[in-house]
Image 1: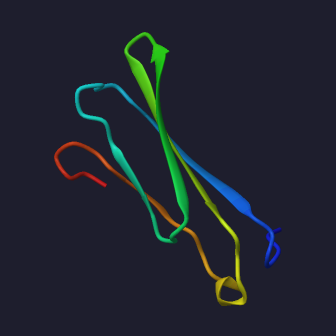
Image 2: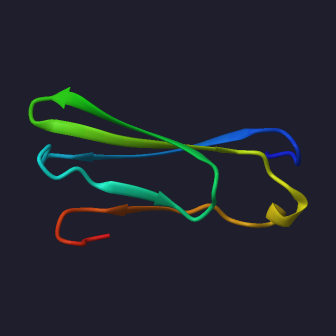
Length: 75
């Protein structure tokens, strides 16, 4: 569970096979975002995004969405 006033971290990751066109990951909530890309070997890559923020009472019963956008605008 998430508590008001205590920092939280959400993670979103996706694997892909085209290092020339990295997917973009966006969040439905603002905060500090750290992106990383890893070579998983055998032609596979992983894009990862970490979102850190401190919840407020306005976040109560809210949702967090991570959207992945691939080359060619596929989501």
